[in-house]
Amino acid sequence: MRRCMTAYAARRCNQMLHLLAVAGWLGGLWPLLLTLRWLRCLRLRAGALTALMAYSRSGHVWVALVTLTGVMNTSLVLGHWPLALGQPYSRMLLIKTAAVAAMVMLALTNRYRIVPTMLTDEPRAIKRLTLLTLMEIALGALALLLVSVFAMLEPQ
Image (cartoon, rainbow, N blue to C red; front, side, top):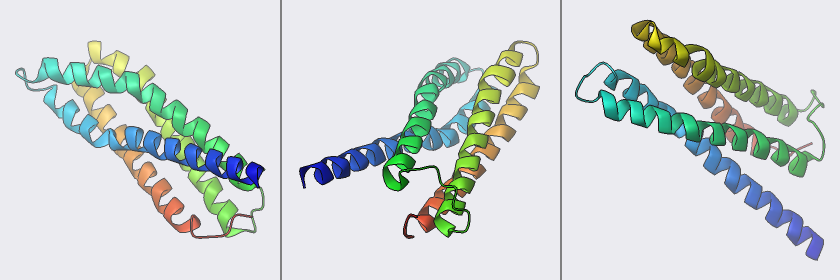
């Protein structure tokens, strides 16, 4: 009985941390878009740069936590990688995993490929950051939609 309670508590704690990390990452993307627009306004530029740097630093933590707690959650719920493609739960979890992996790639591209080009071609960099951030938001919405459906299914 005690072991079951400990496993249950570990799963709940991990889910809570996962949800907080998702909120930090995905929830920060809309303000990020607004902040990118503020870069064009001389009066708001300094504050916008400060906000962008702060989100960039915290974004590393959010992405790492989402990834780590997501893997842990899969392990705690299923006990294995979701390879039973005949099961709706596993299929949706794999699609969600692919969406999150694409989000990670977009985030890394934004931070390490596009942000450095702001020194040489800021208007183009802002356009590219905006487009890729919108794609990241769309993938995040897909992941949330999938979770809202497969969370009601029996894990297999």
